[in-house]
Image: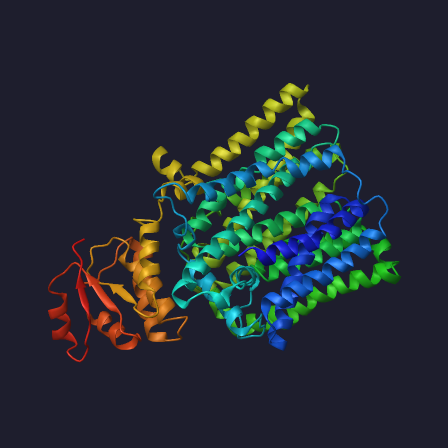
Length: 598
C-alpha cells in the first residue's frame, strides 16, 4: 500500500537536502512536497494518455526525479552538512503529534473492538474510494469538464490501491481498498501534525530553541482534536484533511518570502495547483499571498532573466493551465453542484470574524518584533477569506439561506481551522515577546496552547463523556463508529463477496442502512454502474445520516434489489415472515432468505 509513497519520499530526499541548503526548510519542505505530488499527478496523466501501468510509470517518474535531484545536490556545496539547531527543533519536535496519531492506528489493530477500518467509512468515505477506483480503471488520471474537478484526494488513494492489485482476489478488493484508504488518511494527518507544529512555532525567534521545541510539539497535537479532524472523520470529508496541510504549507512558504521572494512565488504556484486539485475555492489564499509577494518585490521580479525567470514563468504557467483546462470548464459544466443544502459541519461562521480580528491584532504587535512578513500575510489571508466567502455565498444564493448551504458552511469550517493555527502561532510569539523570562514564556506557551487545544476538543460542548468519545483517537480505539463499528465493517466485507453477495432487511441490526449502502454501491451501484441500485442505496444512506435509523418496513425496494443485482443476493433477516411478504409483493422474484437468530 505504501510502496509508491516510499518511492516518492525517497526521490524527494536529494531535492530536500539541496533546497534546504539554498533556501532553508521553510521553503524546502513545502516546495519539495508540492513538486513530488505534482510529479505523481503528472505521471498519472501520462499513464492515462499512454495506457501505461500505474505502478511502473510512477516508479520510473520517481527515478527520473531522483536523478534530477542528485544532479542539483552535487551542484549545492555543503548540502550534506547537519542542519542548525533551530531547524531541527522546529521540524523534529512536531513529530510528537504524528507519532500519537500513527500509534493510535497501530494500537487499533490489537485493541479488541477498536475501529480498524470503519473510521474511514463514514459519510462520504465511499465517494473517495469510488473516485480512486475510477483512476485505477482508466489506468491514470483523466481531466476534462465531465471528470472529477478536484482529483488530488482520489489520486493519492489510487497510488495506495494500485500496488499488487492484479494479484488480489475480487472478494478481497474492498478490504484492500479500505485498508489503503486508512493508510493514506493516516499519512495525511501525520503530515498535518508536523506542519501545524512548524506553523505554531514559526514566529518564535531562533534564539529560543527550547521554546520553539515546546511550542511546535504542543502545536502538533492540534490536528488530533475533534474540531480539526473529528469532524472530517465523522462525515468522511477526506478532502478537508488533504487541503489543510497544503494551506499550512502556503503560510510557511510565505514567511520565507522576504529573503527568497522568487522561490516563494514558485512554491506558492505549485501549492496553488494542489489547492485547486483538492478544494478549489481556497485557492484564493495562496493566490492572495502570491499577489503580496509580487507587489512587494515587483522591481526584483521584473528584472529577472535567464533560468530564474524561466522557472517563475513555468510555475505560473502550470497554475494557469490547470485553471484553463480543469477549473473553468468543470465550473461551467458542473457549477450547479455548488447549490446544495448544508449538512455535516456545524456552522463556524460566528467564529471566523473573531479569528480574523485576533489575527490582525496579534500581527500588529508581532510585526514590530520579527523580520517575518506577518502583517502583509495576515492582510492577504483576511482578504482572501472574505473574497472566498462572498463568492460561495453568491453562488449558493438560490438556496434560500446561503449561510447554511453546504459549500459556504464547509469553507467556514476549513478556513476557521487554518485561522486557529495561524492565530495560535502569533499568540505564542506574542507571549514570548512579553514574557520577562524563559520560565514565564514556557508557562505562557503551555497555557495558551492548552486553552486552544481544549477549545478545539470541547466546542460545541455536549457532555464530558461525549466530548471524550468524539475525539478522533478515542473514537477509533473505542470503536465508536456508527452503532457497531468494525463489526458492521466486517459484515460489509462478507456481504460484498461478488460470488455470493447479501443484504440485510428487517434484520434488527442498528447499522443495517450503512451495511446495505456499502454492499449496494460496491456490488451494483456506482462500481457496477446501475443508477437505480445507486438510488436505492442513497435513500437508505440519507435517512440513516439524518436520523441514525432506517425504515425498512417496505419490501418494494428489496424486490427491486433482488431483480437488479447479479448474482441475486441472499437476504438476511430477523423476520420469519419476510419471505412470505416478498412472495406476495414480488412473486416473480426468487430470493434466498435466511432468518438469523440475531
